[in-house]
Every structure is written in C-alpha cells, then in structure tokens.
Image (cartoon, rainbow, N blue to C red; front, side):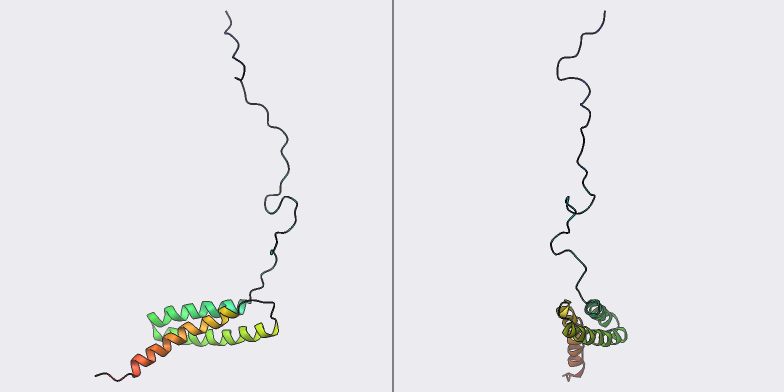
Length: 119
C-alpha cells in the first residue's frame, strides 16, 4: 500500500522568482550619493596634524625625537595654511593649526619647568 499524500502546504519550497538587478554598491539608480566626490581635505594639513601627534608622543618618550617632529609640524602647518589661503575650497585649516600647537604648547611647559628656579 502507498503512503498517503502530504497535507496541503507541505512539500518543497517554491522556486525563487526573478530578482531585480541591483548594483553591489551605491544607489539602485546609479546616481552618486549627495556630497560624494573627491576629498577636499588638504593633505599637507593632515600631515601637519599627524606630525604634531607624533611630536607629542616623541616628546614624552624622547625629547630629541620630539623637537624635529615639532619643527616639521610647524613647517607643514605654515605650508598648509598658505595653500588654504590660495584655495579656500580645500578644507583642513583646523588641522594645520592644531598640529603644531599641541607639541609647541608641551615644549613651552617643559621649558618653563626646566627654567623655573627650584627652592
């Protein structure tokens, strides 16, 4: 005797239907996202900030490493601010200012501690 047929609703899943073709990245209509485009940050300003952060770490670890990095941060910050003035569309002025400001502030405090007379 043959087994009884399965109740309705049981059985293999239905075959998948046609799926819409969607690109892997981006919007489905292919248009760019608002604000998307090439970066407008000045790389010299970014370099100034990175050199300033490295100068802070170098000053805390070894003063002989921190001073040249601080000088490089100041130089790249000045170059970045000059480029910023010539092309105001590019961003990065706060990075060009903050990069050299932090290590110079630390160097001034270290000089103050060194030059302050002890009792």
